[in-house]
Image 1 (cartoon, rainbow, N blue to C red):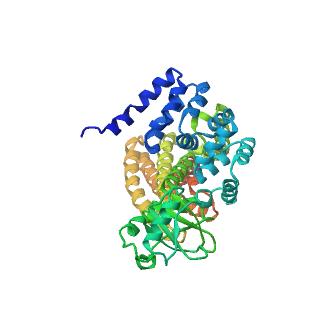
Image 2: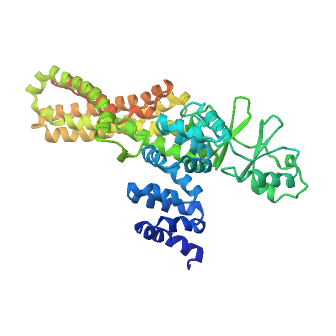
Image 3: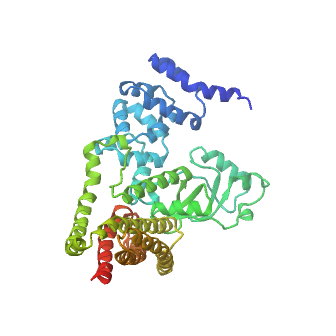
Length: 463
């Protein structure tokens, strides 16, 4: 299908802007403010342009942008870049950009900037925006309240459709999402949440109460922000109403905010699963020193765990000296046990994080993983027996080595599966991230346990 004129104009905007930027023609760039396409179209491309220019030219480009586009880009910048940019802007320029920011993006910016920058920005906010920011900042750091946008469209159950649409026209411009209209009583208590389409297609004299269905879902402002992710995914919502302890509607959470949270939580789980302190900013914002700090703590702790492995090897040194062939299979049994444990832990951690498995279902999960571990252990044990016989150097010792490897694999796989499924439940019960139970931690523990199991079976068959 051929491009429409609008599509063609949008497609050529980045090249035109780059030409103006290359020529440092800021006046012409500012003159073209009215020619910009919709912010949703322009923002992603413009963000790339902004980050590609020289740092000394970035503020000049930023000043030439439409205020709403500048505000959107500001909310995407990392804290260090945003801080440098805001320092270069005058107070009136900063005030104009802040006024265009959504309340939740404004609060996110205030959270991330240094204290001196935050103090300056707070002083530039209007009294209404300042009170709004303080209200949101009053909620716990990782709560839904920190994500919510206090601007929404609310109506009363006894209003007719004509009055509802007038309310939408009056307050919809300030709201981050007008696709859902919220019904509240005189005290502001949430009664229902209905799609805008239902109001639009209803006769003008029909009453809101007549089209209510009482099927809405909501989240509390004090809920963990991951709860908003789970609820939105489970019920396939694009916005969620946020209520206080008295069920009073105080804001909404939108799909884009929840997706940001999901990305952050996934990133944190990846980092914790690799025994790395989660990075809060872009990778390139971290110096080698900060990267060392984020990793060294776990690595030092794991060194001491591995010292236990050295102790186990030392304790069974006499067996290894007498039966050197046993050393050939140490990497096999240890790695297999660790891999099985990581598989089990990954599945359970993911299921707990998504809400598929509840804390109360721990015994059922343990039983299921134990049965799975027995099945895997038997199959790999048979394979280990065959390998032990073939590589055991002689028919008599080969049978013994095969039996040792087989029983070790069976035991260690069942044990690591059991440990890997129980530990995430324990961490969840202690209000800790279950992702801590994956990766290097599992493999380090399995190294120690696996060696003990291996040499215990060696003692049974050889001594």
